[in-house]
View 1: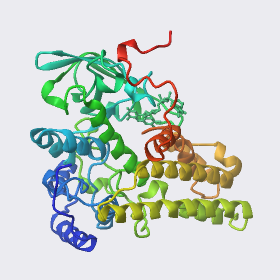
View 2 (view 1 turned 45 degrees about the horizontal axis):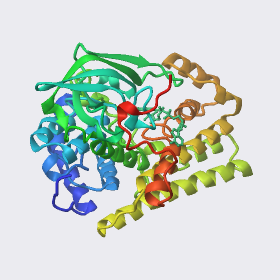
View 3 (view 1 turned 135 degrees about the vertical axis):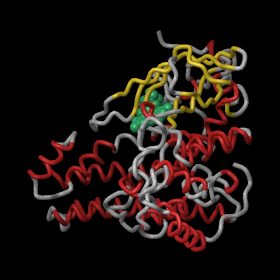
View 4 (view 1 turned 90 degrees about the horizontal axis):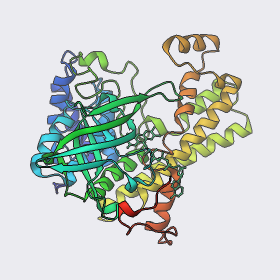
Length: 441
Ligand SMILES: Cc1cc2nc3c(=O)[nH]c(=O)nc-3n(C[C@H](O)[C@H](O)[C@H](O)COP(=O)(O)OP(=O)(O)OC[C@H]3O[C@@H](n4cnc5c(N)ncnc54)[C@H](O)[C@@H]3O)c2cc1C
C-alpha cells in the first residue's frame, strides 16, 4: 500500500469517530447517501491508507471502529469482497487513477465485487487455472469457467485471474483484471449449499471482454497481485472475519437493491455484544455462546462438556494473544512470518470445536435444521427456547472456513515450506510451461 502517516492512538481515533457520528449519522438517509458520507470520511474501510479513503489503522482498531459505529446505533459500512480484498489489492498494485476509479466506489458501497479465482480444476492449485484472456487491441477477450464465486449473483465487478500466456510456467502467465459482471458474455449460475443458502455460483465466460485499462498490475504478473488478495483474505479470516458487527445488514452494489433503502431500517435490531479488548468479530468469538447453551441445557457441570468449553476458550485466547503479539511486533517494525496462515488454522479449529460442542449440547435436536423462516419458527416453538437454530447454522457452516481462502492442508504446506524451510513437495512442475503440463484424460 502507499505510505501514509502513522495512525493516531486508538482512544483519539474513537473519540474522533464518536464526534463524527454525532454530527453525521441520520437514519433517514438512504443507505447509499450514508455510505457516501462514511466512506469519504475514511470510516468505512479504515484499514486503507489515509490518502486512499482509509485511516491506516491496524486490524484490531478497524474492528473497534466497526464496533463503535454499532454502539452508536448507526449502520456499518459496506462489507464484502470489495472492501476486504479488491480495495487493498488495487491500492497495492494499481495505478493511482485505478485506485481512484475503483476504491471510491468500494468504500461508498456503490459497487459490489466478487472473487473469480477458483475453477473446477484449480482450487488449491490455483496457479493451474485455465480461463483464458486474449488481447484484442485495447480489450481482452475472456473464455472459461469459474466456480465457488461467493456473491457472484450480486456483483457488479469481479476480481478475475486469467491465463494470458499459456507458454509460460503456470505462475508466470496469469493476469489480474477487474471485469464487468453485467455483460452478455458472463453467465452466473447460483449453487445451492447444504445450509439451504445459495451464496456462491458458477460463472461462465463466453467471449466476455475486459478493457486493458481494467488490468491491475503488469501483464503476466497476476500471481503476485493475487497473492496480495489472498494475504488479505487469510488475515481477515484469522482476525475473525472481514465483516464488522454493524455492517452485515445492507449489501453493497447496484444489484442487491439496498442502496435506495432507508439506512435506519437496516441497522441491526440487536445491539452487538461487547467483546473483551482485542477480541475479533462475532463468528469465531470464544466459548461464551456455548457456555450459555450448556447452562440452559443443564449440562454445565458435565465434565466432558466443561473440557470442550475450556478448550474452546483456550484456543480463543490463543488467537487473541497472537493478534496482539503480531500487532506489537509490527509496531516495532518487524513481522511474524506465517501468522495469517497460522491464525486461519486456529479459527478453523475453533469453528469445528464449536460445531461439535453445539451438536453435543443439542443432542438429537441437532439433527433438525430450519431452512426458511417458517421451518425455523416451527422448530423454535417445538423445543424449550434454546437458540438451536444458531447452533445448527454454525455447525453446517463450519465446513466452509477450513476450505476457502486455502484449505487447512494448504495452510500447513505454506507454513512448512515458507516459514519452517522444509523441502517442497516432490515432483515440482513450477518451471514447466503451462501448455506442457500433464493433464487428466
Ligand atoms: C464457502 C466457500 C466460499 C468460497 N468462495 C470463493 C470465492 O468467492 N472465489 C473463489 O475464487 N473461490 C472461492 N472458494 C473456493 C476455495 O478457494 C476452494 O474451494 C479452495 O481453494 C479449495 O479448492 P478445491 O475446492 O478445488 O479443492 P481441491 O484443491 O481439489 O482440494 C481437495 C482436497 O485435497 C487437498 N489438497 C489439495 N492439494 C493438496 C496438497 N498439495 N497437499 C495437501 N493436500 C492437498 C485439499 O486440502 C482438500 O482437502 C470458496 C470455497 C468455499 C468453501
